[in-house]
Amino acid sequence: MQLSNKEPVILSSTYASSNRSGENFIKDHLFSYQYSGSLIINDGKTIKTFQPGEFRLSIRNKLAKFTKQVPSAGEYHSVSVVFGQALLREFALEYSYKAHRRHVHDSVILLQQYKHYQDYFTSLTPFLQSDATLDDSIINLKIKEALLTLLKLQPDLEDILFDFSEPAKIDIADYMEQNFRFNLSMQRFAYMTGRSVSSFKRDFKQVFGISPGRWLLSRRLKEAYNLIKHHGYTPSNVYIMLGFEDISHFSRSFKSKFGTSPSRLSA
Image 1 (cartoon, rainbow, N blue to C red):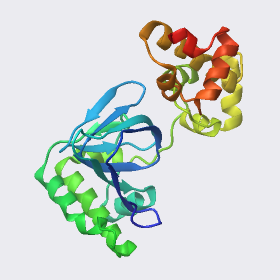
Image 2 (image 1 turned 120 degrees about the vertical axis):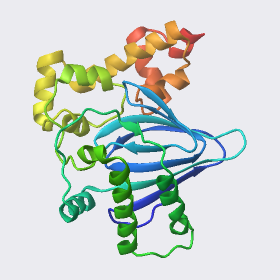
Image 3 (image 1 turned 180 degrees about the vertical axis):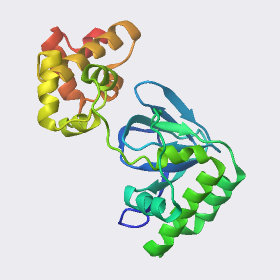
Image 4 (image 1 turned 90 degrees about the horizontal axis):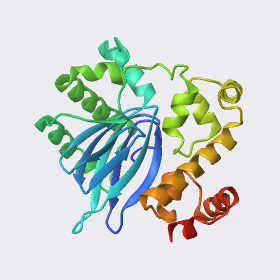
């Protein structure tokens, strides 16, 4: 469920039948509470599992693969408050907040356990009813309440929430080796490495000697071979893990490169 068709939103995620997996480019910060089930996050560097009763902050301009795990008896349920950039800029001006330094963070961080966080998410219950008819001004107030609560209890979050800078130009080789498993567009890879698309393609060719598209396909296939041959992964698991659109495309590309199908290799 999503409240408001504009920037400020409150999101509810509920699944009752099966686990859900995918990947996200985290466009905006999200303040979330895990009611039931668990969330596994893999950002290419670390794997974290968030359990029922825990609070987390997802960091904007980050990548994350996720698995939403439904418990054996019950459902997966989480609620998130989205902090859009326009609202954060308005809030920063109103309350005189600003980032004082830049930090390196994981895509999603575990927040401390405070009863005030629990009380806040309990207060959102009326907003998540199917017949809720609340205008954006009320939603804005609830989002500002979330920000005030977070900053009161964990003031160090100021440097994260009010860092409005865009990704800086970084080393392409390191970034691509860490994130080749993500199924991103060329525009998004360029943005995340602090470049225009044309600069990204030019710099990439200088570093790797081939185009980004050809390198990504080759690198993903090599990783797929390694996972299937030496670690016992199945083709149906690998193609999702490595950013392929579908298993047919993965199988064709794999056979073209290695002369055998991934299913035969795994047999």
